[in-house]
Length: 397
Ligand SMILES: *Cc1c(COP(=O)(O)O)cnc(C)c1O
Image (cartoon, rainbow, N blue to C red; front, side, top):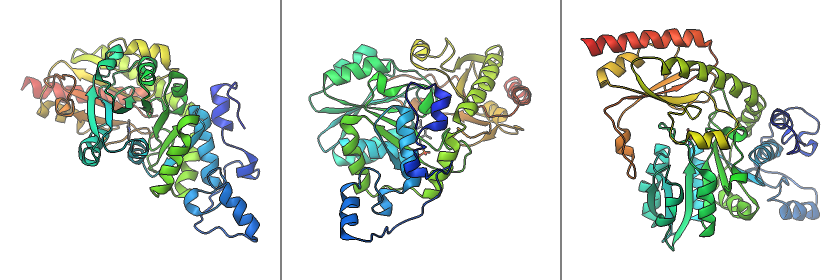
């Protein structure tokens, strides 16, 4: 078992490896189960009493494969319990629906992952939950948006695509003065680069699909709660029938053990490339939390212990034809959604102004998002350099 006084890399290796689950095996084996059988009525009663606490009871409640991974994530995030979901999107909807009811009001950050915004508009609105979007950099101004029926403050830091870093402790402090529940989409930091519960977050969400799995081959989500909210989150996820395949959990648990070294390399490679991009004449500014040009950079410096491979940059000018020429025909950067695997990805993002309602975005300056993988940065720079040549050829035509 790990101890929160141990150093980060030690905790990544030891978290959740309790012999109660592993029976001494290093990687908890795959327990596939629906029915679990008991010899006596007494054992059945005992399992039933402990069913919410890691006692094998019925497949949907989980097996030792799940329990070991859940306790590992809970330990690393710093909460008391973790519910597993079949995707990050399911973890977000599961967390929100565990605590919102008809007539409630939700405060949602304007830079949120687009499917989360769509969930608010297309699902929560239909259930009678009203959403107000707020500027990711609103800080103390959040007070003015809180209503008597506001129930949840949802944060994502840094924001998807545009990377604004939020003042999480200030926002959570104000939210708690008004008895709101605070939820953070903590996917970018992963469970190791910030301490959400120490910043006042009640529920921390991970798209484990990204860096926890780390190899672009499994979808999974986690929601970790503090003492006050764990039982409700856990029971709701059970009643909604949320469960994950033990084979997928095995892969996620395996990915987790190398998270520290992978992130360190992603971070190093991404910083090399971001610095190179910052010197390019075509680039307006870099949206990487470790750069001063990224809104909320001061909160990154204060609250995070590192970065990773995902960042964006904004071009001074451009058009669809030129950015298309840039991102197509890359040798190493593939075009695709998601991120967090070992491979580099590139995304030309259009229409950001259309997925914002509380803040403005100048769409005349194109934004490119990169996920820097574990390839040699020199090869990646050569790839980007050739991309700029194609871009400039279109612009000068
Ligand atoms: C990818 C992502 C999600 C959704 O995760 P899935 O596993 O793809 O459903 C949620 N939030 C953020 C910030 C993401 O990047």
